[in-house]
Amino acid sequence: MRTTGVLLMGIGMSLVFPVFGLIAVQRVNIANRGITMAAYNVFFDIGEGFAAPAVGLKAAWGSYRNIYAVAAATATLSTILAYQELKHKVKDRN
Image 1: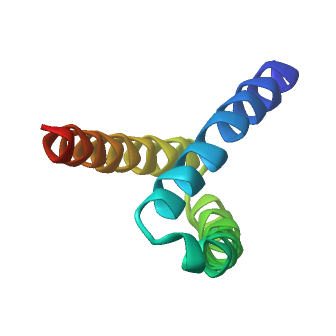
Image 2: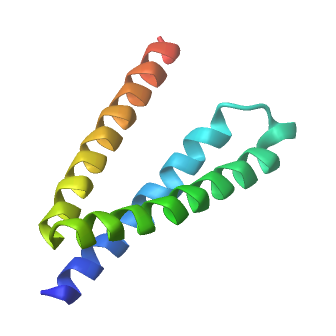
């Protein structure tokens, strides 16, 4: 069971990380794309650096089921943000 979760997370990260990086890079001019990608990586690492201990504390105060609730809320929020970005991009094309 654990292997399946790790596999799904790896597949998800391999798809999500580059796609959001591409979105960030496409929104700036060519001269600023390097710094934009660097900033994207830094903030992604900072987010993971805060999220891991926060979720660990949440599990310590309750149970491991709390982690799944936090993950579901985060995934839902990410889906909403990605959808909003897609709508904005499609609107800009028209």
